[in-house]
Picture 1: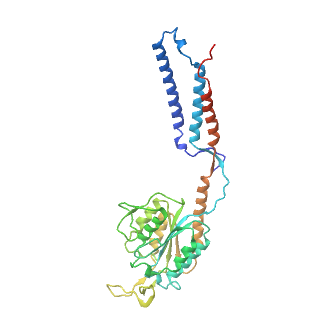
Picture 2 (picture 1 turned 180 degrees about the vertical axis):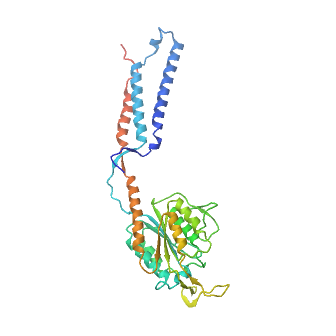
Amino acid sequence: MNGSDLHFFHGEWWYLVPAGILLVLTGFLWLSLWRAKMQRRLADSQLAPLLVSTSPSRRAVRRVVRVLGLTLLGIAALRPQFGLEEIPMSGKGIDLAVALDISNSMLVPDIAPDRLTGSIMEVSDLLDRMEGGRVSLVPFAGLAYIQTPLTSDFGAVRMFLRSLSPADVPVPGTAIGKALSVALESLVGPQETAPGEGKAAGKDEEIEVKPFSGSKHKAILLITDGEDHGSAPMEVAARAADLGIRIYTVGVGSDVGDLVPKVDESGQETGDKVTDPDSGDLVVSRLNQGLLEDMAQLTGGKYLHYNGSPVAAEIYRDIEQLEKQEYASRLEELRTDRFQFLLLPAFLLLFVELLLPRNRREP
């Protein structure tokens, strides 16, 4: 963006200025023809001058002054901008929804001490690195919910993070599609039901996202082992891509996996392992990397593998790039308005037009 370039904020309506001028000139022409017609009706050519007290030259001057004033008003309405305002930018950042898997499989200890604890530590580290923006927290298992709406109070997000456990979601399983839908809802505000869209919060209603609010650049950070139980996550990812919302995925766990521990109603491990209700075999949870890679690629995000080595720094580097884009887009809106310099001469011309004498001086 070059601040020395003249820019019109409402430049798409420029054609209304010449159209308005043409309309005014047409009105003046019609008025002149009508006046001449009435003069011919009222008197013959010798008496007509005696009936007209308005000076044609003065009438022409007034009309020129009026058209110039209205033209300047029309240009001012387009909101001309020139130069940039030096305004300190505070609160730089984006809107980020953190969708965190807290299903039983996240208690698998293939990452010490377990997948969920390691993931919570990485999210907390990411919050420490972020210097601005807003974050929402969306825990999920078989359903998803907004634990904290978009907020710049990262301390509150950390407090809820520390208390998360599989007991917070009474529906077992892993529904990534529902988690993404609720994450989208936290980013774009209230939503209405509409056919053909993804489902949110485990409900049967379908949702349609509304236009952006808040930051222009938004992202979803999805942290999960990638196991999904028929929630159509790719369909929701496609909707996020249509909205320009990137999904950064973090695959937690290993390809080998481990046994899934059982938990009681309070979320504490019982010491037993989860078994398949049909076969009775012990359930092994493995990382489903392919699905997470596909979602990240579809939305222009990035896939990261968390196996115990920190990933928060790399996540932050990508988010920081979005923050820079957000900063640049906000600067784009800080062009200096110059319409005030047109309003003064416009009103002055219209005022002068009112003061100009309309009749001939008496001899």
